[in-house]
Image 1 (spheres, one colour):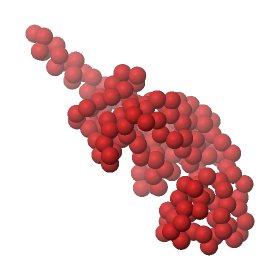
Image 2 (image 1 turned 180 degrees about the vertical axis):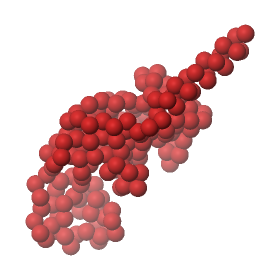
Image 3 (image 1 turned 90 degrees about the horizontal axis):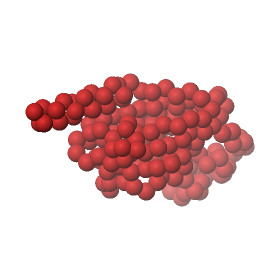
Image 4 (image 1 turned 45 degrees about the horizontal axis):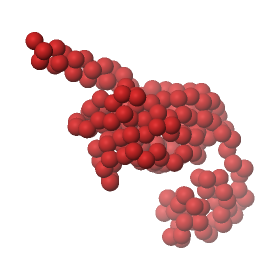
Length: 175
């Protein structure tokens, strides 16, 4: 009887996790908060959740983490959180993270990001809690300058030269 109850509880929590993450959540606001399913309790196994975050036109999205605890793996091949600079998984990866170190704050180059959380079938942890805010886009650079993702400007000839002139390596991304 106890085994049947446990099995029912596991099946219920797994189906709840699937219904929570069945479709991408669309968050459209100047700011907000989101977290892994079940946070601060452990997230479920075999889960993929996506949040498409859009802030007002002309603004950029900043994602900051309040807490972060995912299964650790040097290549983040088990449980991971990925932030894409746009609304598709084909867009540039701003961040790929796992483990328990709180990731750095991340800023997009447009007003939309896609956040994808994935867990595998084994170890689960508390997950993450994050906030998003909108911020002004940096001033545009001159015609002979490249705009780094940090908002700084560097000479256009400094792109694709193998040197991290921007400080975030964005001058080397599309080479």
